[in-house]
Length: 163
Length: 256
Image (cartoon, rainbow over all chains, first blue to last red):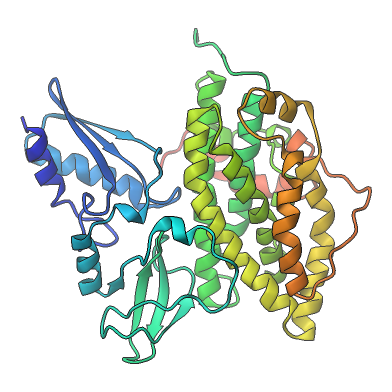
C-alpha cells in the first residue's frame, strides 16, 4: 500500500507521453490523490477534448502505481474546472524551455479574447532567447502546440499555447 | 433495465444537437487529413477535427447517460439511423474546396463560441464543464478560420471569388442555427442552455466585421430553410454516415 504522498512521488516520475520531459503532475493533469480501502483514487483532468494522449496517460498512471504496489487504482476524469496551462509551475516551464519548447506566455485568461490578426505575438526562442521569431503554423505536432521559427538563430521551435 | 430517464423535456435532444454538430463536422474535416493544400493546414484541419470529435465524445456520452437506456458514445455515434442525428445541415455539407471548408469553419466556430459561453452557466453541471473546456478550443478555431477568411477574401481575384462563392453557398444554411423550436424553449426555460435564436446578434457581431474586412459581400437572408437539427438531412448525410459507420455496421461491437 502507498500513502498519498508516496503516490504523488510515483506520479511525479510518470512522463507525459508526448512531451516526456515533464511529468503528468507538472503538467497539472493530476488533480487529486486519495487513499481508499484497498487502493487509491486518482483524479485527472484531460488537456484537450480530443487529445489522443489522454488514454495513454491513464494507462501509465495505473501501471506506475501498480508497479509501486498501490493496490487497486481507480482513475476518475474530472472536467471542471477545465485544464489550463496556468497550472504548470515554473519548474515545468524551465524544463520545456530546455527541451526546445517555448512555454505558454501570459495567463490563459488573457489569451481568450484575442482579436483576429495575422501577425502572431512574438515568442521567446527557447534556443537562443531572441524574441525575433515568427509563427509558421497555428497547430503543431500535438494539439497543445504551435510551430514557430527564430529569425535570429534560424532554428524552428514549438510553442505551448496558453489555454 | 430499471434505469429511468429523468431528464427535463428536450434536454437529451438539445445535448444530441450539440454532440452531433461536433461529431459530423469533425468527421467532415477529418476527410482533409493528408489532402490539405499545405502541411500547416493539414495539421490545422486534422487538429480541429480532433477537438470536435473529442467534444462529441463527451457530449454523446452525456446524452447517453441522460437517456438512461445504456447507450454509450459509440452506440450513439455509429449505430443511429440518419433521421436520429440532430446536427445542423451546415455541418454535413461536403467540404468542396479549401475556401468553402474554412468559411464553414468560421461560420460554425462563430456560433459555437457564444453558445459554449452561455452553456458554462448551465444548470446541468456536466454540460457546463464540457462547454467551459470546449470554449477554449472553439475560440482558437474561430481565430484560425477567421484569418483564412480574410486572407482568401482580401487576396487574389481567384481566392476572393472562391471565398465569395463559398459564403453565398453556405450562408442560407446558417438560418437553421437560429430557427426557433419547442426544444430550445423548454431547455432555456429549465436553465439548461440558451435558445439558439437568442445567439443571432452575438453571431452576427462576430461574423460581419470579419467578412467586411475580407471584402466579401454579406448575402441577404432568403426564405431558404434546412432542417438537419430536426432530423431531416440533406442528400449528403447518408453518404457521410455510410463512411463513418461502416466498421461498426460490418463488425458490430468491434473495439480498437
